Amino acid sequence: MRLEGKTAIVTGGASGFGAGIVRKFITEGARVMIADINGEGAEALAGELGQQSVARRVDVAEGPSVAQMMQSAIKEFSRVDIVVNNAGVTHLPNALEEISEADFDRVLAINAKSVYLSAKHIISHMKGNKGGVILNVASTAGVSPRPRLSWYNASKGWMITATKSMAVELAPFGIRVNAINPVAGETPLLQSFMGEDTPEIRARFLSTIPLGRFSQPEDMGNAACFLCSDEASMVTGVAMEVDGGRCI
Image (cartoon, rainbow, N blue to C red; front, side, top):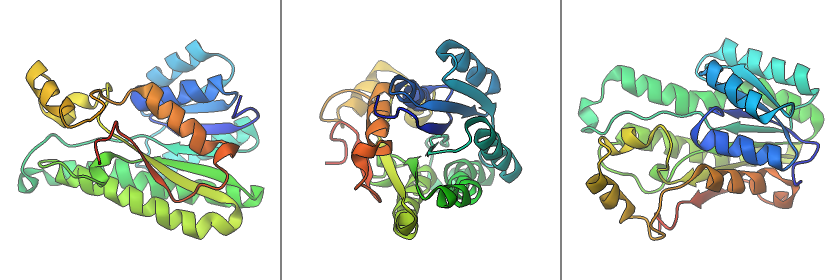
């Protein structure tokens, strides 16, 4: 029960890594807002997980939607201890000059602007509480970029730098900010990363991961739980690779 008495918001929490984080947090005693643009998916997961969870539809790239989410969480929980910025998208693999402007804007809005918006609408609350934790779900792509995913790579590199900058600025207020860097996992985004999901492409991708498997939602939940718990009270500004050795 490492998160007993804590409250959390997990964006993109209805599926994939986000759902893994939600499940782990609830197992460890937290109350969790499952925030997702897929409102029906969030409702379904909340229905499965019971009274420790609440669902909220949110568009993390839209300021008013994020503001309403934060206000709803504060009203529901009285205080928000943890925010996990997990919602993310990618563009399909392609030459960098061939990626459309619309795809570029979408990737940066959901992967980068969302972190700005969540901070804008929760930091004053955390400062008032004299503490809090923000966890950004970045990627190994921000550390060891893969060809043909240039603008996705850049968005995740942005998240890592933002994490470190936020950590330095917010430390005097007792607010910790960290990131986790998963390698591709068994999530709805896997096919988008690979371009095409075939046994041959999977085998080629897995050959670059020393531990020989994809990241699982449970892996992200375990790492997120540690970084958001009081056990990590001296850890801030870290981008923890949860990648089976991919970045070595």
